[in-house]
Length: 325
Ligand code: GLV
Image (cartoon, rainbow, N blue to C red; front, side, top):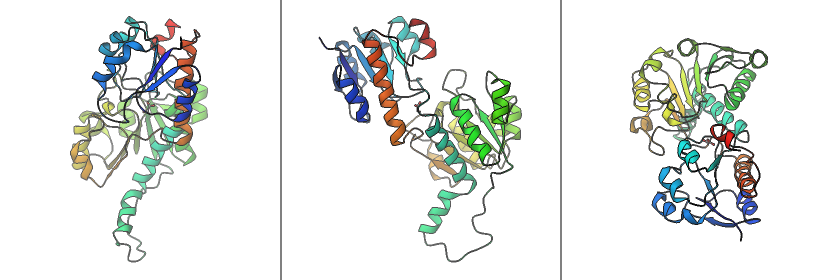
């Protein structure tokens, strides 16, 4: 009998076709909306599942998944998964590292340059018919070259962001739990420093950490107060890393100059005050949203399901469950 695989919501077709070549596949829900109860009611029939970062994979779902052997998360981040529950229920969890590194760093860099050169504001200004002649004092921004970028979290995406910023002539400071090796520091031209120093010395700070209990509200009122008044904060990692109410207050009272956000603390809800601020650029979590990358994510998720249900080791187990391979 063919194994049954549930894909929680539509993903790029390459992933679906790969899965269909081996399994009976159900694409379960619509792109958005709460399907938790409905999922828990049917998951018992399935051997494998592909989940999105917005689908909670919790104790209830995992204990209902009596036959479930793998949850392939269609994302690199997997804070939607209760990893301890997956271990208890002996369900492998995989993710999609590597394939979205460039796309996500590109979005972080795009947010930076939009803020520094006031691109979104200038576009609105032009559409509103306010461009009535060249003006030496109009919409002056900040040049990136010679400024300091502070990168928090120096994994794959942090390093790629560092390289992009270097290419634009920026100095790089970074902070991460583990210092990267000296060769990597030298080739990136990046210097490690304590978090508080990084916040105080950087003209822009970009977040590239996963969401964990340790990184929740890593950037809060105290940290924002350490930042320069003309600094920008970029977040393309996870919303929970920033205390959004504290960020809104800092932006309102001039504590920092601007923020570029692709992710939100209570996604998809956004702290209302942020919606009205001119010095904020808001994106709808599109860090990995390129045709190339989303196809590779779908393919990676499908290949992990194929490996595990085919009796082989997963290609991309999450580090916490790598010992189960
Ligand atoms: C996107 O946010 C991801 O974790 O892949």
